[in-house]
Length: 211
Image 1 (cartoon, helix red, strand yellow):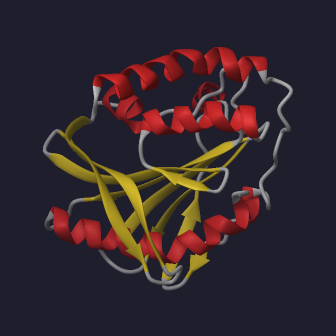
Image 2 (spheres, helix red, strand yellow):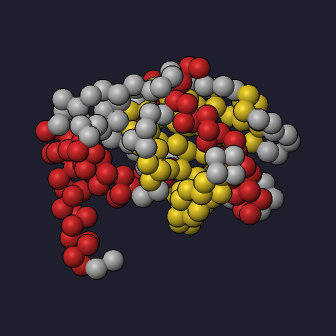
Image 3 (cartoon, one colour):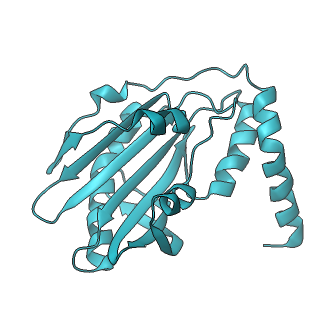
């Protein structure tokens, strides 16, 4: 990235908080459907939902969410969390796992952006991937920002699009999607499992997250 492009990104990021506050009258978009209706049977996957701690809920500032453990057989489990923000204009910004996971004791071993194929939706999307380690246990995390019709894999681009959409669309709503699976045999098998689940759940996400 050139110094000019870097400077532009820095300026936009510094301006983000001020601009989203300026556009605090942005329309408070609601989910297409409340996440309480999120299905717990998706293809071969069966899920059990859970509730987050009230303190965590207040810190995150989400208006609606789904958190559940899905499985399609022994050793084939994925945890999903989707948080929906009606407005990010008053400081309730989407939190990145890069900030939250280390606070929970997980070390980030690898961080990258990878493409994943979603045959059921007929598309390929780029998502963020983390490899985490804690006391010898490993997890692979897939996450992306599913906001205002875009799939965004970068925290920086998420903030840039937030500023631009607050100006051009009068919208600061957004969603965050995170999938986590433990590494049981090896990282490759875990990534295959996560990609399979992402393929199944993606069409469902679009029923809840507004474009």
